[in-house]
Image 1 (cartoon, rainbow, N blue to C red):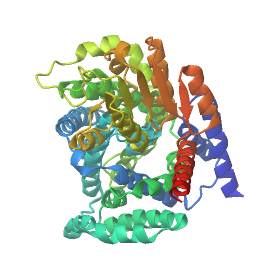
Image 2: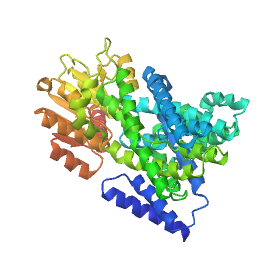
Image 3: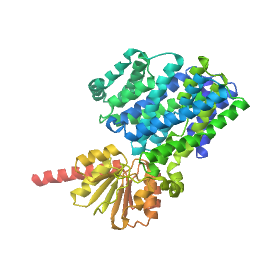
Image 4: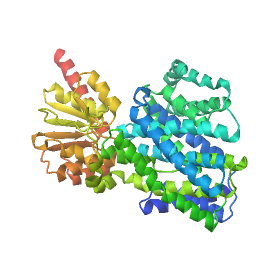
Amino acid sequence: MIELIWIGTAYFMGLAASRIMLPPLVGYLLAGYVLHALDFSPLTALPHIADIGIELLLFTVGLKIKPRSLIRSEVLSVGGWHLLIVAGFSTLTFFWLDQHITGGLILGISLAFSSTVLAIKVLEDNGELSSFHGRDVLSILILQDLIAIALLAFTDGHQPTPWALELLVIPFMRPIAYRLLEASRNEELRLLLGVTMALAGGVFAEHLDISADIGALLTGIMLGGHSKTEDIAHKLWSLKELFLVAFFLQIGLNNLPTQQEALTALALLAWLPLQGGLFFVLFIMAGLRARTAFVSSLALTTYSEFALITTAAAVNSGLLAQEWQAIISLTVAGSLAIAAPLNRYSHILFAWLEPVLTRFERKQRQPHLDRIPETIGAAEWLVIGMGRTGTSAYMALQGQEKRVVGFDADPTVVEIHLAKNRRVVYGDSEDTELWNGLPLNKIKGVILTLPEFNIRCSATTQLRNLGFQGTIGTIYYYDDEQLELMRLGASYVIHPLAEAGNQMAEHMLTKYNNSLSGD
């Protein structure tokens, strides 16, 4: 019965949140507080389920990480300076308020971290995890997590063992992992392999007194690069979403704050825009465009779930007063509830603020990677999204001697195509500056093969609003998508699998007719 109450409450609160255009996770956060206020007994396995959800999330993220493009100069400068500035200011503030030097230092540094779970989930939901700003955000989050682990070890007095360097063994396990993946030809076996490896990485890391999350992430990176890892990530999607509900529910399990504690939490939330503004300034100083700096900063403008862990450790060690646990719990929950809807509409928000924010951009002697291309030469055809479908379309146009240019928001994908002598440049289809800077009057057709439906809709709308009269071809996966894309102005819409079936039938008939002619 108790399981039904908890799961049912999470569902209905998530449904209510989605009805008012908020992400369901906001409803899950509220469900935790509601159940706690009604004095329902929590599920004993809830924290463990939440831990599994986070491990699966970071494992799937690791599958998509390309280490060579992960660490960038702006990551170290932006992440490092932000941590120092926020931690220093927060430490002075908490020392003045609470007169706890060590506790204020721990709490100050904790509040400099951003939520890994929310940022990754938002980027993944928006299809931006592999984009330029997605990689920068992910790198900064990993940097913060590593520092958080060291801080937690200092707080509870539990130092990692010298054997922690054994984590470096994980990359050398890739040949074995690849063989297991090749042997797992059944879909259920691939799903089980993914879960097993994620949990194995977590257990191995915990054995070395390192966070299980880091072990799951490293295991995912180790397995990444295989042609079948995308299939594993797809199969783990719904499973990790289900387990992550427990993470958001358990945030509300702490004691409900008093009025004074709630006011303190609101004061901390009031400082959150300044933290986001600091990220924006630092990204601009690193040479990024205003749009990239804005969406990256918005993804990082939260308080981290690590603050819950470090605060609890500091309270247990007597470094902070007991009430700080309830304050930080409400503060983290509030920051997640605020940031989730803002990140969902980050590109729309930037469109409103663009005239103001672009004034802060710095002129660079050498163009940064996220800069809009100044020219596409004599190209008459554009392919937006250079995945499998986009690459096939590009090669087909090139085979007919058409002047074609490909665009992709993943810097690594761009580098791969450039190495194969293909005309592919960096470009994010949701960036209004991209379309405004292109000579659309010379373009005959645009092919949109982007995986996310809302991004295909946005690109189609922007092209037609700018007066583009050429052909727009795109893809759909569901019937309602097809109708909506046609309504927005797409010239034709195809289903990739249906088109593959048509081509297969044509090839079969051609082969059959040729064999008859040969007879």
